[in-house]
Length: 264
Image (cartoon, rainbow, N blue to C red; front, side):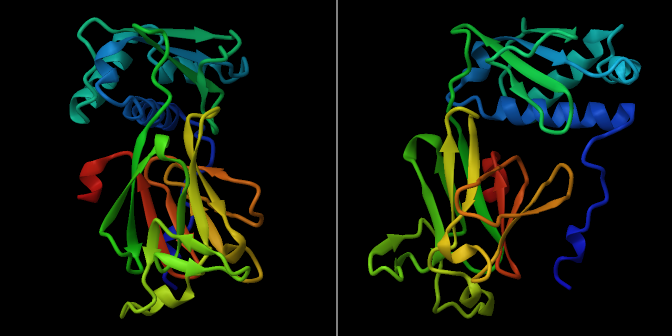
């Protein structure tokens, strides 16, 4: 089957030093990538908060090089250099165990870790640019840019589609019904949408009326855990992270990314 490569090979929660460190660095990279308009140069420091159990503390201390914090800072700096995130030369890194997560910090979903980014204005701008492209199925554009300030982005068959209630809907990410790609025919006119959540500072995926059972399907494959989540209701959204794949129907796949180079 086409989705054999989606089968999970990783546990949802890393349980060894290398896995914890990798997940943490990926998370930090994703959060830094959200800093738009040169905000990276305004970052004063990163604060990592860890609230693990006493039995796990030795693992987490090793993962963050607690006794050699400059090693973790060097790895973060390497990410900044590789992805042109423009961290300043004098940025700082602090690591804290057993303190409550600040309200301004962003918590990881699969580890007891949160990240707070200190800037000259104290907060990172709560906005982002993201990109979506089709890995299978045929869209009108090769790729789509999503701006957190622009509201909702509808996904469906044809750019202008009439709903069952008679009104017309604009699909910003559109699969033309006259395409030679047969998979487009299985996309609903009102399949799903993506919108920005200001409280979470994340893009969210929602199924629409035409994308929930029994009429159709929307699933989300996590790039981090490789697990697949099914969206059964229109009211409940799922957070989108770097590299996640949106599965529409049986065989159409969209990739979500904060990296424009992956979508050129």
